[in-house]
Image (cartoon, rainbow, N blue to C red; front, side):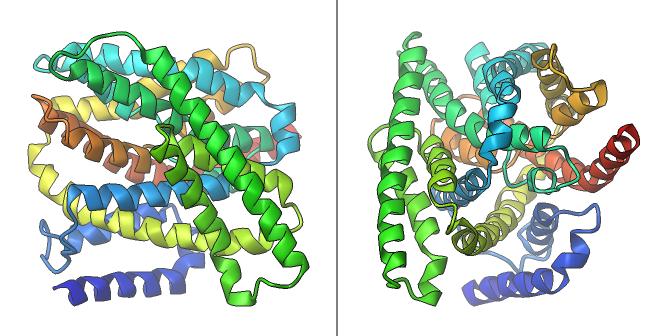
Length: 397
């Protein structure tokens, strides 16, 4: 069975590679195809795909995928554009993110009678971060204005790392005998350690790479690995020291983009390819192992919350946080809509599954449904809405 499953993954990778240019011109994104492939061939479908990945294995694969994507995306951030438009990501993170969690909490109180208040706030936190990989179709498209692309990229790069300490603090409160308090201290600790690890490790790594590259010591095939290894080093060092590995990965990637301007293109391209490969594996396993078995638990309250999570719960806080900015109404709605949920929420589901909360099945099903809807709706709408935005900007210009 293992060889059959690996063979199916290889077939998917080959076919997607062969048709990737054509697929990217359609409303269908890679994550949607990978998830559908896993669902079709997994236990809920034909039963031909089974890698026997447990919760811990899926968590590791999803975390590594997210780390590589965060690092490579951060390395491509245009610092000049960010400097001129820093208010956008600042507002999204400082105002929009807390309001999103608060809106998710309020909506959950209204819809989920059986969930406790702490379970609802845990759910809201799990669904607050956006996905850098699913948003790639927007943040990488030159037709979208640079301020919006940079703002969404920085937001998706940092909000999952910020939510990690918040989630763990709420989980500690939910545990038997758990006490409230210490959330701010916990967040400052995780963020500061993650920031320090990302900066120190990347600074030393770039210095070493520059020295060896100047001497011609890095031979061709090995140029594909340094940044993947550097991203994972930032992540693991921060995790081992009690910090946020995702913050470390994003900050490390951002610093790399600043320090290695002459080497970033040749080193980033293979790193993105590795990230794409891990994304394919993660989403395929997600479709086969998580989505398929969970479909039977779908209820109207879960579906309604998932729809609201992608619309009102996300879009209203974003709109409020962007009041007073020069963005037009359509641009504010565009930013609000493109808050896809994906890898970070999957990682959070796997973390929370081990906490044995009383209503963990309902919480997990809500996250899975939201992510699945996000893969479909954001994937299908990305290209059409980007084109519409480009046409409107060209007419305005």
